[in-house]
Image (cartoon, rainbow, N blue to C red; front, side, top):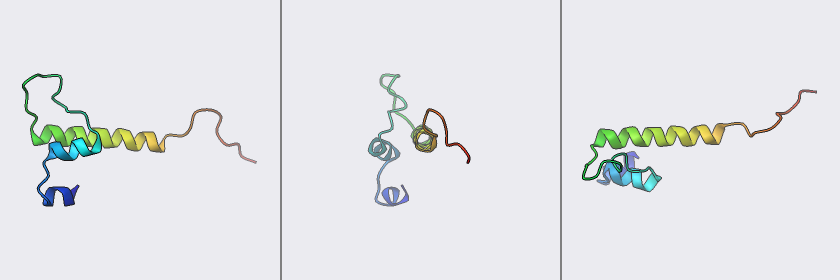
Length: 64
């Protein structure tokens, strides 16, 4: 992310590249602030990390 910011990318562009839904999409004509995009990116990445590290459903490994 730091590299993208150094290259001049906006928080909205970074969010779009990460697949973050527009946090202001529900409000027509609204322009999101950088802080709204930052919060949306953090929420999106935290949810993604949680999905990656969740154990698989079903019985877990059994100890010998």
